[in-house]
Image (cartoon, rainbow, N blue to C red):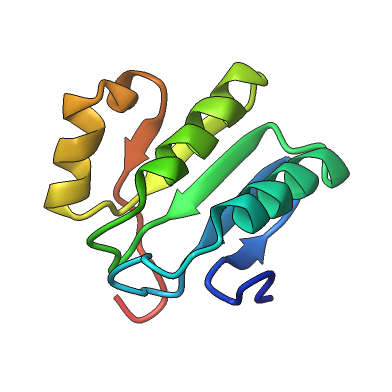
Length: 111
């Protein structure tokens, strides 16, 4: 299901909610306020305990997305990041977000 600006896609909802960006390489046209509102609504409406972000194929994210991850963490929601590119993994490590989020390599359809 695509939501908002149609950049953010919801892959599954529930206690573990998975969202992603459809393999979009650069998330330069994402509406962060809309994205944040959608993610917070999903976490609330589906009693989400874990919010996973599938970053398969994504090479560049706006810094505001890190703020959304931190906000979820502060609310007691476990945050997982799936398949970050080497560059994104480095950003997560340099900013110490790798201490707040779990970074995982997972299989995705077509991989």
